[in-house]
Image (tube, rainbow, N blue to C red; front, side, top):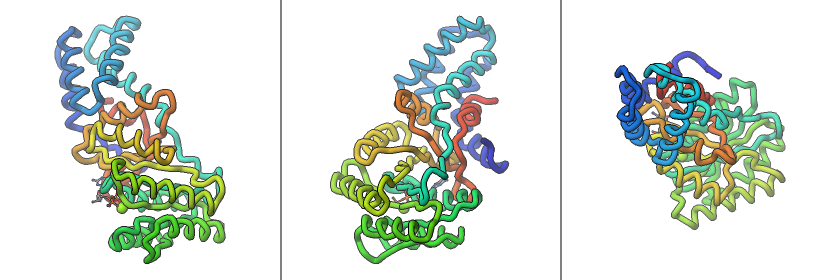
Length: 305
Ligand SMILES: Nc1nc2c(ncn2[C@@H]2O[C@H](COP(=O)(O)OP(=O)(O)OP(=O)(O)O)[C@@H](O)[C@H]2O)c(=O)[nH]1
Ligand SMILES: [Mg+2]
């Protein structure tokens, strides 16, 4: 699924360093052990992780044998296809019509890009002709409420906020309001927190229960926002937030910057048995810089078309 032109170029630019490193290894004439060793190093450096790299290279060797691949370009394409295949289960559109309001709860560590992604998501939803309400569940800082309010204004979307320090209460009220007004989607922002801050993780559980009280069966989506530049740390974050609040999907941000990109491959493998959709990737700070994740495009950004 390719959106407006430009975002793919930004993704490719963001992952250029990784791509240059990987593609450069295929510039020689032969496929030998040295190539495999260099690939191993380059993939690990790209945040793919040791275990996932080994598995990928094993599959690559098997594919080379099976298909009788002989040239470096053929092997590069084969690696790209293996990566695309590993990523494919994570490519799933956000299903919008299964509940009304569809309640989306957003969580993540400090500065991951939650509020920005919610603003962009509101814009994307408006493009899909959905009516949206935002809940300012980050009650820690007044600035957080204002930040969400600005994103709301940009999109012509209302934001429910309160002076109260209780995110569960704010979000409960917002869900109730979205129900009463017959809106399509409610997105709840939450304050950033580390998985080691157990009282804050408990607060997230409380928010989730409050949502269920306001609308039984909700939240329909519990999305973790990951900073793509944090590398392998994303795996630990997924585990911890999943254990606390049961994740249904991910958004990976900042793939336009210094991110190496391989962590998406590691995430896909880690959850191969129970695929966790990567609903969107963030490729910039503008309104249009949130795009549905596309496995083939991403693999091509890493290893060339
Ligand atoms: N380049 C780039 N910057 C991004 C992207 N997404 C978010 N940012 C920036 O990352 C910074 C943090 O974003 P926020 O949305 O405030 O992060 P947050 O998770 O809400 O932060 P807290 O609420 O403080 O935990 C801001 O400067 C954003 O502009 C992205 O996809 N690309
Ligand atoms: Mg925020």
